Length: 210
Image (cartoon, rainbow, N blue to C red):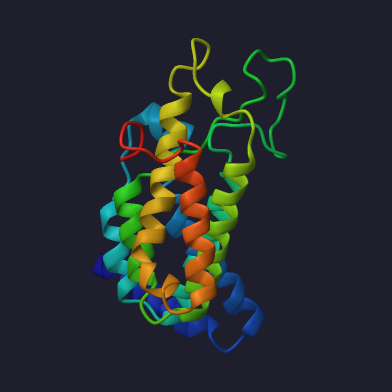
């Protein structure tokens, strides 16, 4: 952990004087920090478990620019994997495959990922607002989907579990920023309406997503 911290601090100092190089470095570090939480085929085959719990304490010691960029990339990744187990624009070979065009959702390790995001949120009011807007958009998009009853079933028994895990991660992130939601009445009203709609449609209830 200390070696990685020293490496990153050195690279930070080396690239800071060049704005374009610095921005590219921030993107690289942020993407690398997020990618650790997304399982890939190589890790599964080799049964490699990356040290995901060490990412948050490492990032906590890095400059605020790094943490802000991680939040930005995290929002983009959550949006790009926002299939919730249902069809979306980025689905490939979706038609006619017998699974109602469902794109397999990317499963993120919820608790350590949540710890990373909450670590990065300290003192990042601008990025916090952007992430909240992104999460509101993602949950609103999910609410508008009309094919929820097709998720899961015999052909895809894990589909509904994946969908609920994806929702739980986003609810946990919203919960971690609830103080920001309550800071203005418009945001409070928007979220109250969205959560009420999620409950009234049975997406949130004590049986499937307590």
